[in-house]
Image (cartoon, rainbow, N blue to C red):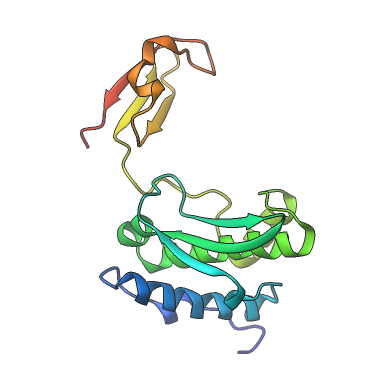
Length: 176
């Protein structure tokens, strides 16, 4: 591939009816191409590749120990709801984390991450892709907090205050 050519994720596209093993196989092939195209310090085959069917707030994650990347997890619901393009963007995002962990023991979304995210055409933070079960809403400033699982905040909203303005909170079941 010529250095001026763009790496087109659509070339690797797989539709959301694919099985988990098919999705992971395509994800790894695409990840290898991204690493080669952008010169990232990542060995795709050294990583475990996993799918999370529980995650609701994160599109992906890198699991690491002592600064050494061990696994990349991709969220199935993101793929089902948003398709391959969103999954490919998440793969690029997670590869940046692996690269920076390998280069500088840095797993953050700091300046280096933001610069590489721009180069690789990926997000720094993902947009919501799953509907929360509840919204916690401030009665004063109307701040909304999404909640996907039952928690102390959902169960005892009256015991908490808004972190921004100190206002009272109320819980609303999401009917969307």
